[in-house]
Length: 394
Image (tube, rainbow, N blue to C red):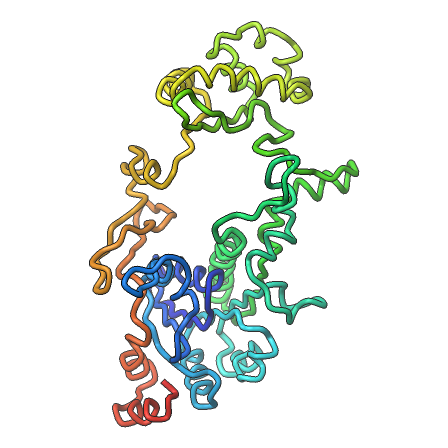
């Protein structure tokens, strides 16, 4: 679907490279530029097998790895030439460093007015914190996510995965597509896209802002409860497992009461009315939890599925990959790899009726495609490539 779009990925770590990854899953050509010494730090993140970073393998799928030393003028010039031959440039370097390297948006736009540049930073390109370094943890803290996550008497809780980076990367991918649409359909030039690690996640937490603005209340942690829905929690079963339930729709909550043998509550205005029920959310939780505690997970889920109640098992990774729904939709796919043999990875998420996303290969070795890309895109000769190697530019 994106055949003919070339993306120059000059970024490192998570959010910005992930945006490029999503584009590559639907046919865009992704040229991943890394420093010759060590490459993208995400190669060393998380679990390793035989010295190969597993996170790298998935995050950098469908990309070609080119090494350029962007601290050397020759490396900077080669990057500018690659940008001139690209549709999209993805960066997450701090603004003052990009300006020093001559890879900032005004410089690249002067060379290629059609360029779309995605710049993801910790705090954004404007404001007093714009040049500070930042990681997803700071976005999760400042967006309000950590403040409302966790048990009522417990500390603010951070997620054990790349939440802020992931949300930012999704915003970034659709922003790139809008910029390309505007350029190609309306005949416009390219433009700069400014995304940080705070704004996208805070957008999902907007209820906190509008509640404070209009009512003056500040939401606080309440565990797995949510003050707009009851029952809504995780519940332990008799075999020591857990299930999650949401009674967000009023009719679902009433079905829960009937399913667990408490039709009397469905007839009681204090529990049947959605607004009045919220004032007694703790009682609702206790009733539901008591019933579930007397059932195995399989028994409870059988009742809830029969009664069309919104409930689901709390899976660990084994439960996830073995679930019949997940298997039927082929959510995970096994990809052959020259270093790992093969690896099970998440398949592309969007499903289109006429085109399938692709995982053609997993993350490449450092610099695996340097000669191939510089020769085919920039027309460098073997002698020129050797000279660059001798001077440690590539």
